[in-house]
Length: 113
Figure 1: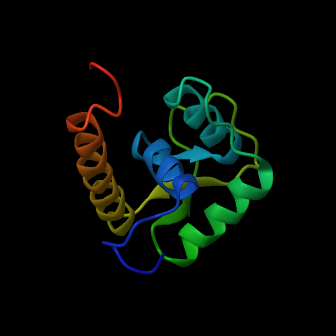
Figure 2: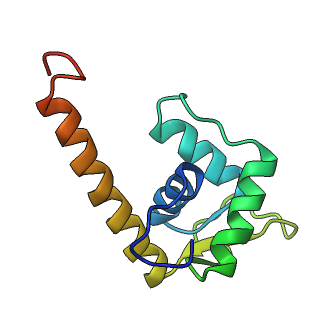
């Protein structure tokens, strides 16, 4: 995942999407992903932390302090925020996925939507 325009893995897309809503710690990201997917995706710890590490190495996210409104601040938690590079990758992947879903809908793969 080194290019802003190449496809990103599903877990990376979902984590970037979760962080688009604001800084969050790891378990909060899991909760946001689960809510965003109506419970269809629950990231396991290996996937979550491996993907966070990769996204940080690719400068798509960075560690940050807790948000000002953090009510459950635990000094052991690491908070992450999306970077401008991550925002670009998120938008590019969302646009790429939209094209694919639109093509599937036009072919009636999704039913009579």
